[in-house]
Length: 456
Image (cartoon, rainbow, N blue to C red; front, top):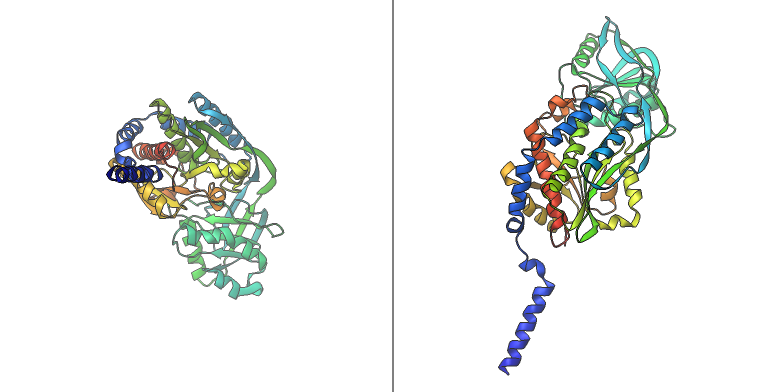
């Protein structure tokens, strides 16, 4: 009787162990503490990442979709991945939006003459307009003016700067809404933090069938000049011209490379950013830093001889800035294989000091697991996990159920440089850049190597 009872107890215990491996699995810090320390140490001494970023920024430069520089960047990126020893390097073709800025300018004509510093908005139309300015601070004010007071005018949107989401809405939606009421052109407050007479460009939404009119963003100083002229009570007239045009879609490509998994190669941890940039500055923070930090994370893992159980894939997505075609094409390429994507991590917020990741999808279990991994990054203060995160390029994956994460930084100065001529290599701090590489490498390696798939 006693032997029978002992046997039943042992069998029950064995079944419990087999069915509940998480309860007895090795803690993340215990299992990966040493390897994470090695990764961080290597990243904080890394020279190759900044050298690659310098080449991309200085030798190739601004990379607007459809431009010769964008094509050069694709070829260079693929060759760089191959030289780094990544596997399965590919450049899947993507048809990309091809908008060309052309000549442009904005000048105050009346009540006095002054040039205004401005950048045309991506996807805006062409035209040569001299017209009276009407100013509004909200879409509600625009609608209240109505066609009678807007038609034939240049509409100035000058809401206060709140943040990129709130103030940026006037860049994205303002031109189309003003055109619907008969406006001939649009000026906006730049969607960014003011910096030394620097306007911020960016795309505006033009839907099929909508009238596309000239639209430009003013520097804060030029906006102030225009506001003072309006306060005088005199009629304010501006000359605004642009030869911008949207050409037929051009040939582009995503760029991909991998460290193939040793046990579960079909399960994918994907990370990356977008290779294209606006046609001003060098696209250093947005998003050269994101693609190169992602690539260098894999380079460091290879240099340390680390091959995880699952595949880690780096992707340089195409056409994020004015078309989002790269992320859409990547999702379409996957088809049903999307179910094998464990997580998608995007870095597209610049390379200031990283603080952690924002995570969406998978519920509390995922946050718990990601938080455990984040503790490995405490030495550099980069492991904090928060709810909600992702990015434009991984949006199509997230909408179809893939867990998404976005790199979070201190973000102190990013919107001073974002979409401006000031987005140049000198704005990237080497130590902060290395911390971003370390963060991506640690998260990618542990997520790809841990016994249980994220969320299980």
